[in-house]
Length: 450
Image 1 (tube, rainbow, N blue to C red):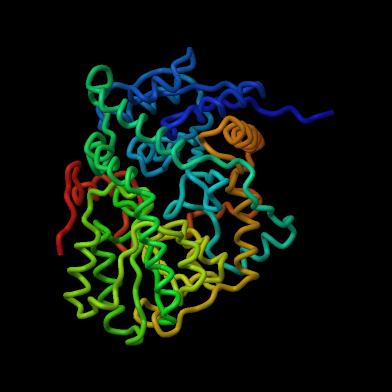
Image 2 (image 1 turned 30 degrees about the vertical axis):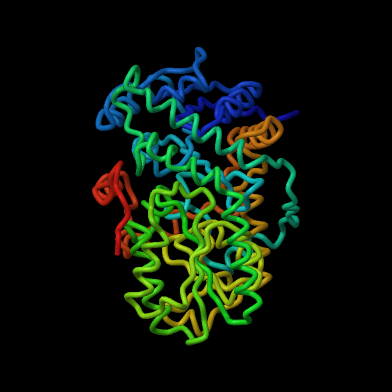
């Protein structure tokens, strides 16, 4: 006789630019659970507006009180949300903790492109995934190997179209959801209009970048790679000790100039989805000139990152998941912010100044253990954009919510093991801290010019 499963009441908050949350809710409903949704914006409503939905049209400051009342009235047991650092979701986590409601945050997967991350509370600073390699080895020892072959591919344009349409529709929020705070680093119309020239010239940029990459490799000179993240990325804004990527660039180039071998080169690679707003070439050129290494620092916009990583002496990340892919290629990696994969045996634990001369190669055994534990505990295979990918991920995520196995086995460390280090770096760990950090940015902010 099968044990009776306790019926969950699951509240969905904002999701990615797709109907993925509704697909998960339908999978839960098919298992006999009750599902609800709160819409904050016009895009939310367009993607999901059936009888399970309510709307919040108040100010962000009014949200915690509204949510607490809603949770009590509806007997909510679980909250599911996309991006734990989105301010409405960050505030929801604090309300939920007070009421004993579980929060499951999800995002693009650590093992992407074919995976989704789903963790209790959140990612990076808030992640409960262990930081002790010995603990990870022990937890992963009995787990089956992971087949990470691509099962649910989707073209880049499909993701880009979803992203653009979602935020452009939200530009009309003043008609219905006039108090919605998008928490965007740039105004969405400005951001996506700026992307059009980059999309049009994408193939040309790739062609020129690949020529530069080939020349670098053929030169035989050692080089290091610094792949930039998006300036608007929550991983940078609220999980790193930098208000702007230019600060990270300044720190890296200064250290490179002072401590790297004179024959070494530094390659700064612009993110493939960069909006084209920040003048990265000018910023890098000015910093390289200031630190006396203008001829040794290169900017690559486009091209094949994996090729760069396969031949590099080492890579530097703020906290991008690219670092995990680099580790899998046995590339030495130095992390500057808070990343779930930053640990002994996987990334360089020496200072940045020492990294240039003594980069530490990742251990194969530790990389395998981390990958296995992640895949079995906090990763779900699938995607947000294709029917097959959404269905596969939704069914598995619904099963884990029902059975209470998010972060299991072996990846549910409480308190979150990276909280104290984040505090020591001045990184916000709660909603109040995030709101204070917002003062460092602005909707129309232009880059630091150096």
